[in-house]
Image (cartoon, rainbow, N blue to C red; front, top):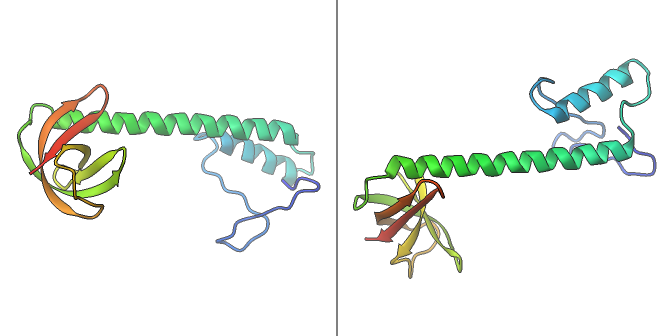
Length: 149
């Protein structure tokens, strides 16, 4: 939908001015909105939504998607912690995936899980291959804690 007085950006990678994208209309509410706008345009009818309504819907849908993403991430972290529960003391090959003042994180290669180094993280940097020992898991919080070997 072209908004009067606004520049339409289109899709940079496709090099097109007019662009929309949707999946099956029963999958996501933003796609239902898109389908309604396209249907009205094809029928020569006015848009199904005014600009303020579209802006409110866009914000709401973005918030809902962000919430779903956070929940999915938490479920993945808790599932990984559950997978390692009861395996304290085991040693794994890992790659450092994050290092900051907030902590140092690693991805274990087998099984593919991520956790935090809580002992022995000094001197490691992103990309380093190290060995880590599982110290603890907290399934509810999705925490996996390692020490450097």
